[in-house]
Length: 84
Image (cartoon, rainbow, N blue to C red; front, side):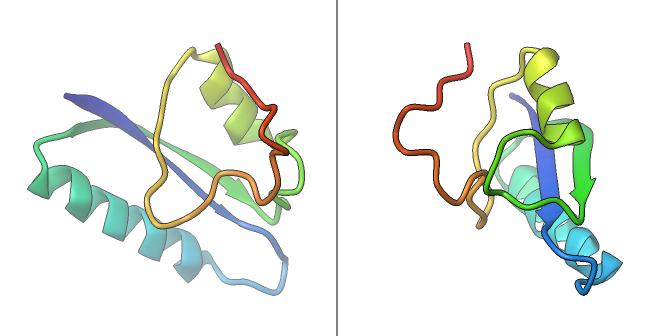
């Protein structure tokens, strides 16, 4: 099965290691479960209060369905967000 990884941190006060850790965990999960990771999408210093994040939007524009790996893709989607 094919997959992508979306990694993000929300603040300039956070470090690049946060992204590296997320990718490392998600890659390990993918390897363990037979997923082939096609691409990493990364947003640095973007809040999850909105979905208007460059890499997130690029992932949606690429028509990819995804699931989270130990992180919510949006803090508050009000139950109305749909990406089709």
